[in-house]
Length: 238
Image: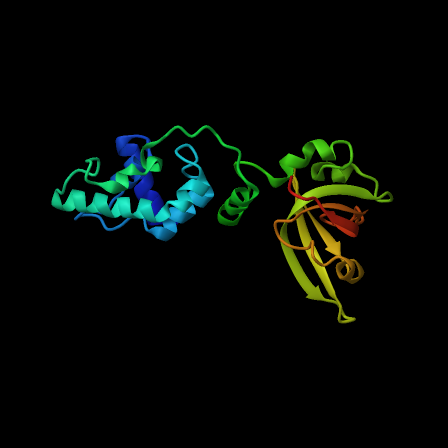
């Protein structure tokens, strides 16, 4: 979004209070003769996807009406600069968009795509976690990542998590191998996926996939424990 945009949004909120509706937000941040445009298409879309307006309207609805929101912002600029007919008059057809004036958002459960947008833009899951929907199924079947340090290095462990990072490299024998970072609701860990397993099941190794993984922990003497992956399967979104 950019520091200048953030600063303008925060300063306006400090001066005149919380934003009550999308119309209120867009009107107050519309360009003036003294101030250039604060919100453009890219910044507005990013704020929507990151969940900045979750208390005002659903993310998917706002994205569908993105062009209408931007048109409202342009009309707000004209009204300010040239004293045209009020945006809230009957002549302004854009005002028929209920998303602009409604603030009756009731905490709708986020879709998996919306949660992933948040991760891509913020670098972390804030509103929800993709693994949360699988908690009942996983109860008693896995070890939480935060508890792996308590496990024996002899026995196999089973964990579940979201793939948040994949690094691929080629071994001396010329075969591919992966370093995969898994995240659950308690922490993160890196797992090593060797060529044989990668060849048997290459499809599941993608960022954003939720997997159930079995493997052995590396030696305690290492600075940070890792898992040597033996088996993996995808947990489908319910």
